[in-house]
Image 1 (tube, rainbow, N blue to C red):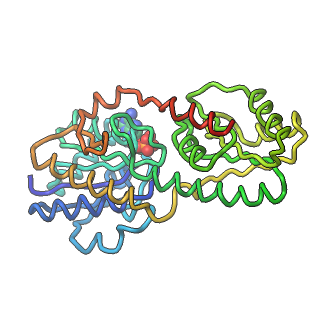
Image 2: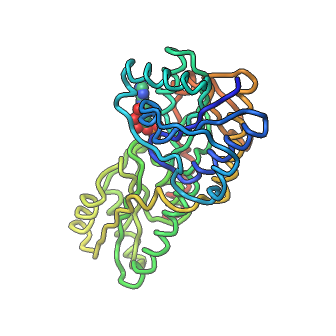
Length: 320
Ligand code: ADP
């Protein structure tokens, strides 16, 4: 193996740049050449590739987004699309690929390996933290801090106007962002897709708080748990409290990566290259109890990541 490729795919996440930098520099340190593929699998199919050097990844460790850019590609879901992608890699003499992305990107990488013998290593990069076999994904910590900052600011206005605020955060299938930011931000209720809830209970909790003299409240909703607008309407009707809704949207994806995400990305990027150097393929990198580990990617994709219900319970106790 002389030349490896690296790409970012699926939803962007802060810290992806730090991971690209780690892959490129570790590879060059070990005498490998690195080809950067732009726009994920879409760019791979279109042959959007360039040789990278040490300075290609200079001044990016602190930047959000991904300098390689990212995309979703319907063509890559087809055998023809993947054959074209493999062809392009062979033409560039690339026989191993590091894919930084979510579980969809990992599925695509697995098919590329199985169908065309390209060696692949997956690095989990997504704000959602919904990938099994890793305690954290790159981008999650930064996202939680962005949401927390928003909660703090909304709390100021909620207090001043004595309002109830419903804040909707990202997380279609997973409530990690809502749970972590909600606990850190002292939200009165946290609604996530993993745990069934009753809006009537939420209303009762608000009324109990109000009776105790609490004049403002913050309710955090993961988008997969329900629409903040509908929930806001229901709560206003049932309580009569002045209620406002904020949908945080794409600010959750942006911003400079936190120290945690940069260090995580550095360690995972280096590990991915080490795995390729050791002749490994079809592995994903993860962090488990502070240790960087690797797992069979096909096995990992079959596992289910469970949210920590103890943390959910704790958030409820502390917001009694
Ligand atoms: P993420 O990697 O963040 O989960 P997606 O699910 O959108 O994001 O996947 C990113 C890209 O990976 C898709 O646009 C597609 O090109 C490829 N991909 C996803 N799932 C598959 C699959 N089952 N087979 C082949 N390619 C896939």
